[in-house]
Length: 431
Ligand SMILES: O=C(O)/C=C/C(=O)CC(=O)CC(=O)O
Ligand SMILES: [Ca+2]
Ligand SMILES: [Mg+2]
Image (cartoon, rainbow, N blue to C red; front, side, top):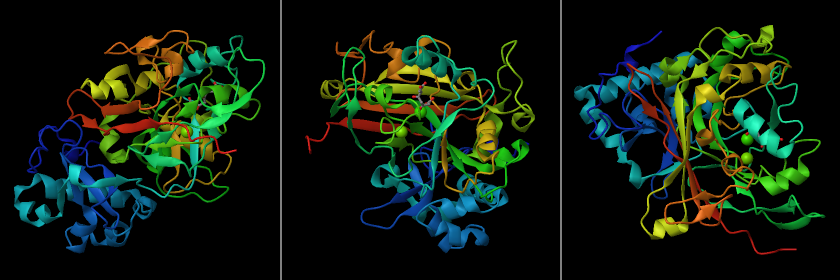
């Protein structure tokens, strides 16, 4: 059901918010900010401002039952509450920000976005990364396993691996080039050295809401109610370390040195109008098993983009260069709800603030590839950048940014805000 918070004609009185590219009043994402040495506080974004929800709640301007959760330094407590509470919060914020009469009450709690620091929005209990991008799985499979690109289980079971929550950081945190055991494709023996094939992976992150007890699966019909919201996620990947270490147990140190997420949680409520029918599965593909069978609207009308700006480009005043563009609907073989239902189908308990990555979201065309490994064809086809530099993988000083936008005819489009990381040089040798 579409409610009035999605009315494309609605506008906020906050200066610069009407028609804002990312944060018009139809978005109302949730996040955590601080000012100076101040404490972390929960906020929403409106135009080029953040609105302090803890402050508004202290003034009694938000539903009373939310005050304790809104006084926390993370979103965990808020996303442990029933979905109805976050719907009530969205409606209250929409009313406060779209009605001119509320200007006096709200204004003291608005802060310019460029005067605040944004933080990781949750204390992340667990992080799991899936592999739902079938075009990515096929392309990267060819590079890692030329004889055996898409493994026979892929179209039956959503493949995933357990990631590492401790090294997830918010957008803007530098990413230090990792050391590792690695083996160049043509080398006879492995060595211990800084990664030479540092890559990004363009993914969506799902923030889990609510809790299920150990032993209690999540039926597919309930899976969307367990998705609190989405963010962008960059699963930085050391391809030379990965190629050497990943068999037989899967990614380990090639992936867990850093994962970057965008700070704002684009809520499930904000995304409701952007849920669409998934693309038809090709003829001959197996139907999903009953526990994964979803009614009609599991795909997401979200466009995706990756940009790169090197140190030399910054120095020369050149803008970021678009590396890829595509969309989530075309990229995802399994939906957000299917990976939640699958994850809990053995009784695994998922908790508010857990993070699930979709897997790399590459489209079917070369320009929509979600990693440099694909864009440079395994390092064989260097990419030429404005200014004349070339890249196969990331160099020190490179700044890689992911962007996403939910877009659909008849609705105000809403942005995610960037998910960005700059590569810092490897540490000096320590051993
Ligand atoms: O095909 C492989 O062996 C490995 C692929 C990955 O890099 C794993 C991964 O992180 C999943 C993904 O992002 O799609
Ligand atoms: Ca990944
Ligand atoms: Mg990672």
